[in-house]
Image (cartoon, rainbow, N blue to C red; front, side):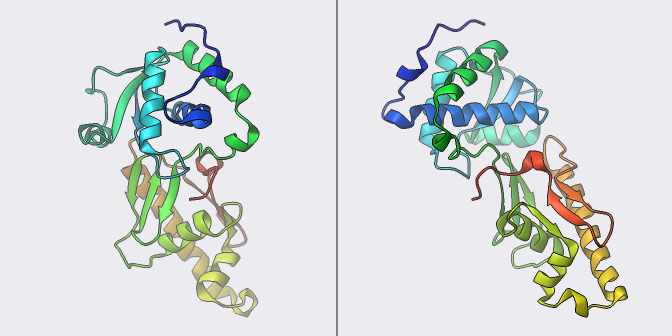
Length: 246
């Protein structure tokens, strides 16, 4: 599939003006991340609205229409290969399934990426990942994972909230969590009590990874990197870390 030669500097989505290139790049980044995480070029699911960054649903719809018009992507004609999760999103007009034409996609991505300013790139959230502590729900690129019931303060909820909403680098030592959750000095804990807390957090993280695997269409089984000793740490796997915090 070939694409007409485009002057990327002259691209403008009405009525979005100078923001147009950043809107398109945001959608291209979304597609790129999904492919990098294992989705194929055929039947890739693209949501009309993301829950992070400042690109609106209307802006994303305009960008998707632009990419279709320029033969970068096409609407996927068969939904038989899609999971029930994505079929439901499409049926509710929250998303569409697309086919990605590899060469035009790479050309469009490179052409726009080369001229979008670093400041505008910093505003694009490449990963749509966040934890809604109030609802006890984790969102990973469109998949919704129910971590616990509302108002239920489980260790998994506390750990996710800390890693995604508090920790500076999406990483926390077990001792850091013990001090934050228990509001205690780590040195005041005996070895037995400290080991008991470590096992509690370690098991919570293992169970959470299992829950995420069961509830994500792509069977993500490595969302958390889990240290195996009480002097270790827990982290959001680097490939799932949001560029911009919600």
